[in-house]
Length: 119
Image (cartoon, rainbow, N blue to C red):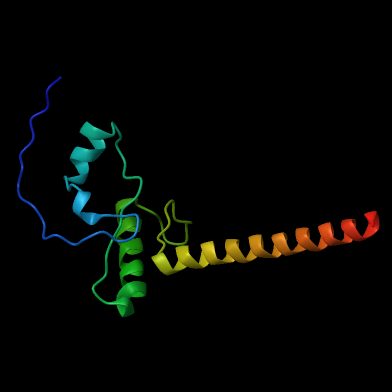
């Protein structure tokens, strides 16, 4: 089935950021993406960019407040969504890397102990 789309314009080139290249993105209305592209009736995730890093917590709270209103979440009830900034994501990966490094160190000690027993 052929789908008709309207092309509105292009963005200024930004250049690649490691594995991610914003120049390869397309932007479409979220409701169009939900229904026509993904066949869904809800948003799974969104990305938001802040102009100033100092505003991250305020923006995070604003987003959470808007989502609570849209989801009709009563006061005191647990949210059915989460809002996470990139520093939290990076901290989680950093913690995982530390744990993995610790486990590798433990494995190395165990292998040295085993080698000492064999000799």
